[in-house]
Each structure stands twice: as structure tokens, then as C-alpha cells.
Length: 309
Image 1 (cartoon, rainbow, N blue to C red):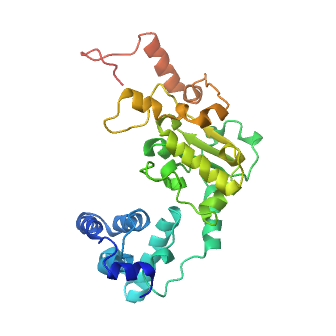
Image 2 (image 1 turned 60 degrees about the horizontal axis):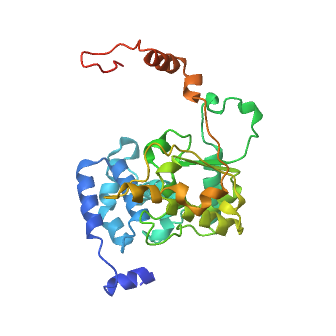
Image 3 (image 1 turned 90 degrees about the vertical axis):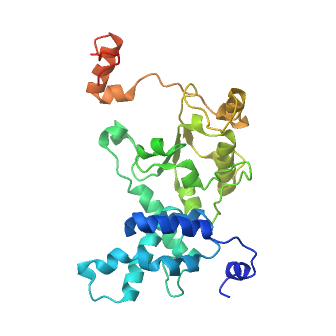
């Protein structure tokens, strides 16, 4: 056996990957190979397949189908096609803090070393592109420092330059009731990135369960080897507690309120700042004028009385 995992699988101590195979079978029918490779990487990283090598052997043909049909690659060997697929899987997995080597898909693929993964994680953050107006007086900021941006929801994260969800960035378990520990080791590329970061921004913190932020606090204390809140790091939380609170199935209003960040012991350690100026209105004149027209009742409405955009 090549690994303890493979031995345990052969002994019947691990669950089968049937549900993963069902998902990949359906995806192979309807998705392009490039999308299938992205899904395959997600399955490896987050679904803990019991036999990743079997999945690779079963779906390698589907994963490389577009490469084999590409005219510019005609005449290349199957080994070369395999390398292209593995390189793309490696790119996806590195974004999730993993490596192809973690799953032993093939015996002769070297991928990247831990040092290379750490370097790439940090350089990715340094190279995040942003609009000049996002920083307003950007000339007053120190260049070269790393600021990590994440949000509680995918929608909010998508509008942040280089943004990720907090669960994705810090490997916070989706079921935080099982364990409050983030799945990040002190030797990982994510840990090194957090050490390098001068600022960490968490948008829509009002939507996060307090246990989620407490797990993040424990992660930073462990990595920074400090008992200070959030390991002494500068962390900025943004959010409006008059909007959406944590989403919990069948929860009562009292449960939702008790699960929010304001009821965490960490809340008292924070400095509270209230924002009073609408920055989008400042930067977007058309939007500002639109709000003004609504406020003055001058915005045209349709026959149902709704504002016409």
C-alpha cells in the first residue's frame, strides 16, 4: 500500500466515494473539461475522498478531453496531456491551500514544494489588482504591505479586490459546532501569509456566527504565539447589524441574536467606529444624484408606483 489512507480503504474502514462519483458523472455530461477540472479540485480539497487515486484514474480521460482535441497539441504524448491537467489541478488546489502531491494521484508528479507554495500565496496577495479610486489617497499608503480581504458571504467577497470568503481563506469548518479549530497548520502557506499581513479586513461580519470569528481569533493567537485578541494583528470588521444576521435553519429571533458577533466575549475588546459618509455616493456622482432624486420624490415611477430604474 502507498499510504495509510489506501490501506484503511482496502480494509473497509473508510466510506466509499459514491456520492463524489455521482457528482462528477453528472458534471462530465454537462460541463466543459475546464469546469470539470475546477470541480475535481474542489472535491479533492473539501470532500475528503477516501480514494483520490481511483477518482483520478476513472476521470482522467474526461478531465483531459479538450486538450486531446486541441489542434495545437496534436501529436503530443498522453503523458504530456496528463502533465497539463495536473498542472491546472495544481493551480486550483494551491488557491485552496492544497497541493496535488497531497492526494498521490500519480507517483511521478513533483508539483511545487512547500516553500514554493508559501512564496506563491504571498506573491498572489501582493499582486492583487485594484482601481485607483478604491484607495482614494493611495499615495499616503505604504506600498508593498499585505492586506487580506475576506467576507462572510460569497457575494460580498466578489466585490473586494482579491477577496475570498472567510471560510475559504481560513479553512473554518462549515459546521462550527463540531470543532472551533480552523484547519490551518502553523507550517502552511496560509499561516505564513497571515504572519506577513499588516491588515486583515472581514466584511459583513454581522452575518457570521460568533463561533466562526472566535475560531479565527484562536487561529491567529496560535500562529502569532500571542494571547492578545486576534494574536495582536490589526483586524477590521465591517457590517451592519440592522441588516442580515447569521442564517440558521429554523432558528428563532432570539437564537439569531445570541449567535451574532455582538454577543461574543471578543466584542468588548474591539474599538467601535461608526461610518457616516456614503463613499459610493462620493465616488459615483450618478448614484448620488439618483439617491437625491429619490429623497426629493422626483424619481419616475411606473403604473404600480414602483421606482423606475
